Length: 189
Image (tube, rainbow, N blue to C red):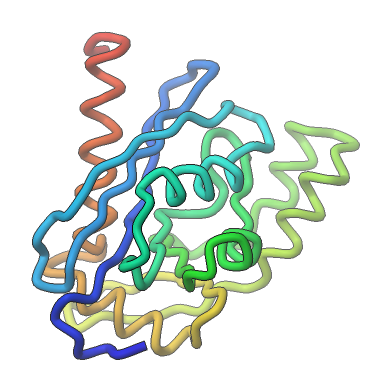
């Protein structure tokens, strides 16, 4: 991937949900120069196992061949609905980086407590593997997983899209869009 390419495009995907049956995913295509080049939306089931397919469908709905990277705001969303970065990469042909913001010991115990006996969900979580910490020039540390791209190269792209704080602009914008659509659909609460 050409890291210096001005027109490099990222599809940032983030969610918003509040105890409902469905969670809203927003996708934002953003160029390296931070020009927004498209919006899309999808739904996932809270507590379901459909998040990977929702991200793949969201990407395909754009019908674009110029997206260079898919950036996910977490891969355990909507109450333990797990996104497989590897499967998203295989199905789209586009590298994936997952960005999270908190250090943790993992979610295995929580998944087991909320979904006893759900081996499919536990195995999906195990397949995610370890996260790699990266401290930005802003002084904040993020935690990355990558598929189809070296985690160091992915980290450089994440940092390049981060203006301040720790949230990259494609993910910040996608989160704002997901929240706005959710408020529109369900009213402000």
